[in-house]
Length: 372
Image (cartoon, rainbow, N blue to C red):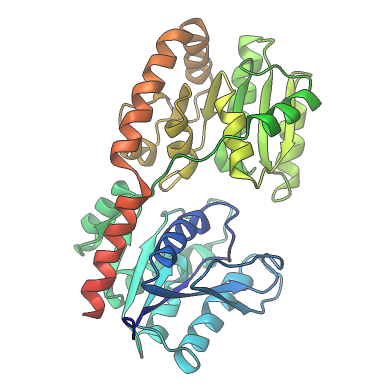
């Protein structure tokens, strides 16, 4: 008889397959652990998140029915997932993602040891005072009631430790070499009459103000450039913001819907002249890591999270400053060979420091320590 598998539960994410954010991190961990054949993994997900998804071997999806509503939906998902785990589940360990879901920790601790992961500390200005207050209270169960608290950003690790005096384990996000579907990428470019290697690229899971594409478009207009810009992502979240982007756009700006297939997105990244990440809020940006791993010239905002993640292995501009972004874009385009050489060295550095295999081993060490 073979050795009994570890029964591991993941919750706090919307579901699988990932569409961005914390789901991408959880997915990378889950898939690699499942492939070892040492873990039986149970994932709590919103019912209908991806009805056609076929989970890999050793992965089981437990669907939780929720109702629509920006704030009520995650509340119900976390609460009902925790209650299901408490009364109907049977796990060796629970891994809870996202600080805002930490209200579920007291319920889970009635039966289980719990690992929590912060994917970013982002109280958004548009939230009302009550939501902000409730969100901020989640620090306490995240830190003090879990068995081990982790953070994907070294910046946030130090933030928690300085504010609360509680140790947080830093385990960064990772990346890997993914196939680049150049043929499919070229088909998209052809549809927009854009030549490979000619364009500036921006991509995000959700097109929202904190991702900052408006800064890119404003800098583009300031420079009066005639090279194409591609904006890729999901435009459904903030319709008024999308209207603003379209009002800033020239004929050379192309709006492309979210690309679910990573190999196609990586193909577009590979064939870009320059990638710009102008976000004003991040945790540990998967997009930043993934673009850097492709070896394409990269300009990023100098928010602390980006600086902590990639250090000097990118060209940074002052966050929110259109003139500075315009200056950095002009520098890259005028010195493209220098920017490309920097990108090549960055690709090697990313591979050495942020490979998923090493990072998943770090999570395994946390799991094993808690269940021994």
